[in-house]
Image 1 (spheres, rainbow, N blue to C red):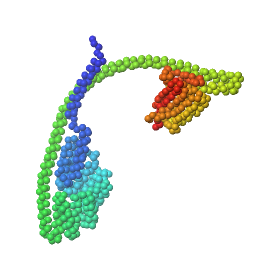
Image 2: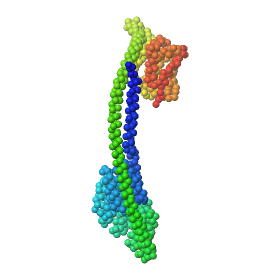
Image 3: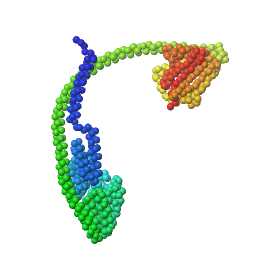
Image 4: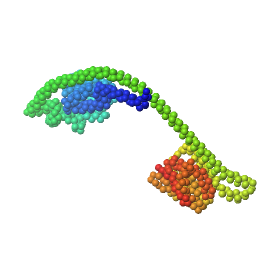
Length: 639
């Protein structure tokens, strides 16, 4: 019997997963067909579109009412399709506003009440707007009680929104004018004007001025009426409100007729007739003709009065004919809109039936999917344990390899330890023994003070070398035990050169060596200052050690792009290529005696290399036997 391989097991799992993927695709496709045609993002976009079109319909209903009504009806159907309550309410409200502007008050009342049924309760501003419109319609129909009640509701819902409050107070003022309660009318109109000024609603303010003029005209206070009409007239010119300006011409004509200034009244009436005719406002044109007839009859100009009487009768007949035609069209539009909404409801009902059918299909597919998922889960668990077994085997193998590597590394570390102890025992024992011998001979008075002084001068380089050896050993061991803590800063290399010169001044004089610090003041590198001192202390010590009397040591720099290269060059004995290759490795490093018998461990250059690399630099060396040596440190330039 053949044992299944890992590849056979994976192939089986992949085939099952592929089958599951195909079923998922079928399931998603079915779900996509039954889901709404609109994603959340698309619905949000359509809501934004509905709101913007409704805004356009509201802004244009006075100029093009038929076009505005068509826009509102289209947005109503679209809102019904995506179930957008604010859009439905706003569309119904806009249709009501359009019919109100055409004086179809009962129809407007029907659409406003339908809008109220669809407004979400938390949309207080839209509710305030609709209640304000209802108040105006009830005022037009003479039901002043209901008008005031709806306008009070509008004010409560408006809250602190000054724009909606201003609209509600403006409509309340209109109602009080109809009730001949001019004191309340003036009070509410003034409140509306103040609110419109506060929010910068200049068009509303212009209408408020006109309303106040109407109130004072009704009270026969022509002086105040003219003052408010004048302000409204000026604003109508500034705001290019032709309809309001024409209305002001009509009011000027009426006031002058009341004051028997018939010639002046005719001048205003002519301007009003021309303007109303240009904007196609037949109702305003009819009222202005009436004012003109009054002026002409008062001046006994019966010929022209008869002419304008004919024009007036012609417009009234046209308005009656248009009104009848619009009434018929209104009924047709109403039933057409209801039919379209009913078709939407029917389509929605069919869609729900289809969704119920496909929901059953989804349930069946879900059962199949759950069964397959359970099978896949079992196979996945088996595959998981199989993989865990293989990982454990690999981990054990890696641990064995690590143990072997650690054993080899331990053997190498033991060798390094033995070498370090040998170096310390050899290089530190001799200086200490010499000091002990000199001290013993001095105590036994075998040496005179002058002889001790001469011996001390001779042994000082050896002791200094031992001190440097001990310092390097401590630095090197510390870096391998604790790690290095690098504190990068800006280092003045000229000052480092001066410090090195002061440190080695005695040795330079003792061996008769010349030291040249060729680094310019302010030549900076970006490195750890303590590391830099250790590096150049070791490089300088090597240069002094291997340079004959009368030689020279030079410290200089050169820039290389964004780097600075600092070099220690001597005229000493130099090195062979083989010696250079062995300098920087613990297993091959060596130590040679200096020109006066100085001895070291050879660890100084290894320590230098580690510190240079730790500071993001590079240590290089060039030398030749008898031609001296040059050690260069490549460091980042100052930041």
